[in-house]
Image (cartoon, rainbow, N blue to C red; front, side, top):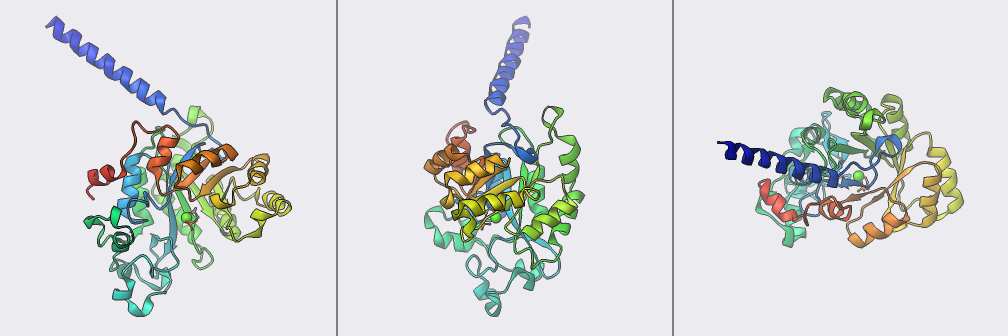
Length: 337
Ligand code: G3P
Ligand code: CA
């Protein structure tokens, strides 16, 4: 009896020690401007290298990997449903040509939610990437923002924090007051409360459970007005000359300082002075869209604080937050794909 008791105690002590080592291995990254953690793993449209972008498959796989943020582009249907779709239309990444041949290039707000649900947004992936194709990707559907929030609400990141959402207001000029609708939904879902009260690192700065991003200054302005506590990232397109002209870059940073906490630009544009200017003004820098481990290294050395990536499994390992190399295909299988 006594022996069994001692063995039991030993087991508990061992699991405790394992838990301690496991947790300290993935200790919290420090928080930067707005409460955004350094070395952020942002799953761009989910685990979208391995599964069709912006679907349950891609987001659930990323959540299973325990990324820091699930990234998504928010648009709105004709009947007012907030949905996660990146492209301006579904011509390339759905079977719209078969279902609505006359509306192939129509915008998302020219369809009702029910109409969008008639589309298959998975099969294109199988055709484009036969080496990553899966039968279960056939007939995947557009998802609501609400569903994405639900995935994040049940998940934690590998650093031990709650899983975050990194939401882009896409074509915001087209979707009147979409910012207000997004913020209202986040509030209903309890995400704004968590930001301000229930999760704080060492009782100090709150961790940013939500980050907003936009290429449009007007959208960032509205987001700041209605939800000032949520950090914002100003996205800059490669087509914008400011990323090639140091003087204009510095002027831009000074202008956007009151609007954003972070700056996001393409990894292709990465030059030293862009990082230096951003650091001088106190911005964090997130680069899009980086899938190559060599680039994780070189861009981090320049001063990148996190990446939008389609291959979150590789980035987690680069940041030494994976227990062993993470086989994306095993994860997809585990979650039923
Ligand atoms: O949102 C960051 C990055 O995703 C911006 O580019 O076109 O992929 O939304 P895009
Ligand atoms: Ca995006």
